[in-house]
Image (tube, rainbow, N blue to C red; front, side):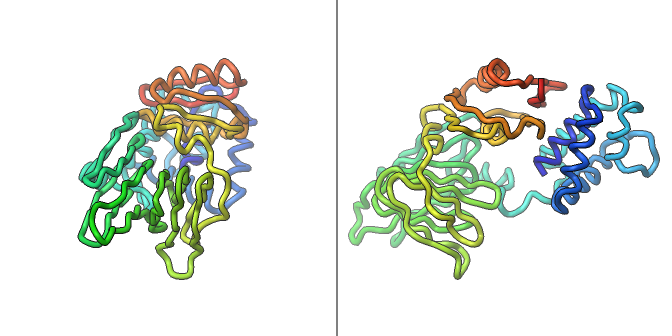
Length: 315
């Protein structure tokens, strides 16, 4: 859906050309999932756009660049803003928490906010931007449910006897701490776990899925089928506690997706530049400064066609 939204923005831009339209067609035809995502964009936008053309699909109208006016392009972008805010979006899915679920959580943060929480047993939890947790300490178990976003946990020894296990539950797995410092990031359809001290046992939610133990310096991505092979933990999975976003030979598209978590509104990247590689350390407190740095060092430009709407395009 994000890629479809980004292509929508590209096709609605004043600078769209035949090469952009050809790349869109290649993307659209490459995968049935791309076609489904585009149909969803068309279906939802049809509720908001009042463009001439009868029953002609919106994609065809957008591709008819000669007939599209600036005002209609702006209207298309407004429509997409509504789309990305979730209006009528039927594909929100179980991998993403509904807004009310985050607001009702024991602890939560807004976009761009970070917070440190000390729990009753002296366990410390950092919440990254736009994150939420429920805390459930019972007689036999210390449990955190990661509702949304990302946390870093430093577990404390339990003062009760016998000691209660400490776990973090995500949609994909239960993560049992074995005396540890670790981060957990609930992504769309997956959880990312990185261990910095001690170890974490991965107990998948589905029977038969791959589990295992992660040790200090390792991280793994967990999906419905279980944990992927462990790899070296990246600095990015803990640098956010210091307000930093570290890019280590990261795709520009992935970097923009990460940076977008720290600001309100839509931040996207044109597919033509998404595979550019970047290295550097950027402040999450000033995303405009980070975008200016990208513009100064890469062949890209930052365009803001309307409030709360920012897109990186080829220069």
